[in-house]
Amino acid sequence: MAETSSEGFPLGPQPGVTYPIRVLYCGNCSLPIEYCEYYPEYEKCKQWLERNMPTEFERVVKLESELMSLYVTLYVFLGEKEEGEGGGGEEEKKRQKRGGKGIMKAKKKEDGPKQVCISRAPRGKKKSVTVVTGLSSFDIDLKVASKFFGTKFACGSSVTGDDEIVIQGDVKDDLFDIIPEKWPEIDEDFIEDLGDQKR
Image 1 (tube, rainbow, N blue to C red):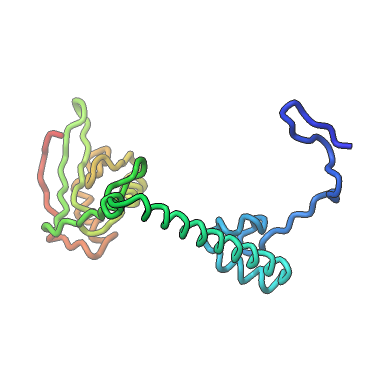
Image 2: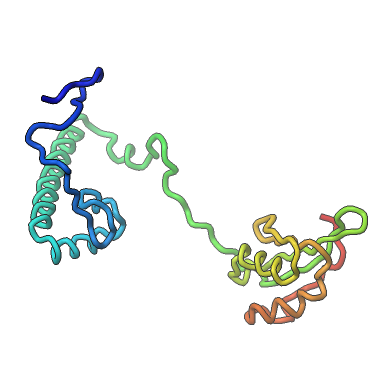
């Protein structure tokens, strides 16, 4: 006989349950079959289940249809209840509910001039850094570019702003040759030297 713990949950083996418990796993997502519905490619899991475990597939489809009918009944019930309560339905839908971020608007890309600007800035007394801006106007990933510059010049390189990469050391002259070589869409005419600037 199963004992009960202080919280009321039964301890030990349950009557009517065969042990060890056999868990069936999906061959597509490698999750237990009960959790396949939370996998992004649930349709592929269903196809795999239909091919390899038809009895389990029938059980899953039956459960889905029962849940769907329950959702429809609940939706109809709640819809009738809201109609009975009266107006304000349209206004309620437009306002953002509590929590969440609402509808996010996509940022528009600026169609400004495509220009890569290279400048040198002092860092301390005798050291300097090279600042590269404008690479994102050519749809270049700044993290990838920063990593490339760091390995190419064997120095530190980091993304500091929306469209700014700082390379440790004075490598401004080398960048005029390396940038068009690495990214052919950037012609040498699009690269501008701003000289020495303070950051």
